[in-house]
Length: 144
Image (cartoon, rainbow, N blue to C red; front, side, top):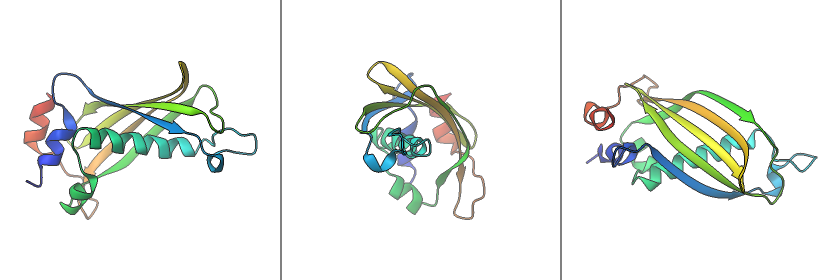
């Protein structure tokens, strides 16, 4: 039962996992010019990963109780246009690659049809001691 969360996360069919969420920019997230501060995009991306996982039936709390964690190894971001206070944004999060011990995500943030930012991340699967762990074979087989 402890590993069921992983199966739900990966794929239910041949399509890549993808999820969209809506986020409204809060005043406390902006800089003196009223733009969404660049550091807050990373919080949004984490929200996107969490909601993608949840939409597939995943439960981070249970995963961590089972001793598995996904930690950020690398992140790169590009800012195309600024977001402003009170903008309603659409964040698209995609799981694009699953390796032996890593996950790769891509992110796109839109205001209406305007693309504001894109990003990519690599996460590693680790145990409680921070040691890299292979993603279980039964899970890897479902995404090949």
